[in-house]
Length: 108
Image (tube, rainbow, N blue to C red; front, top):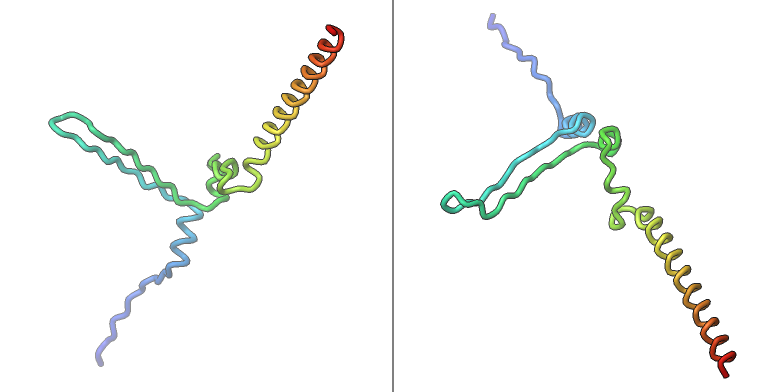
């Protein structure tokens, strides 16, 4: 009787791999340097982090929350602050205009 050879191979699908990478995170780093005659013309440092949002926030990375292109809440505080500053400037200008008008009336 011929014995059949069996192999114990754990099959992993792409979804499982992606879940593991996002759960743990992975960093890919590299540098590109262009030189001519030992003179650095250009250096590009590339750092890529692949992780889930939860993992990134756990690591203290949350830049997307403050980027107005990625979050509708990001620019809101800045816009409100700028709006308040502009309102204050407008009020000061109106007050100066009223004082100037009073000064002109008193001068005549």
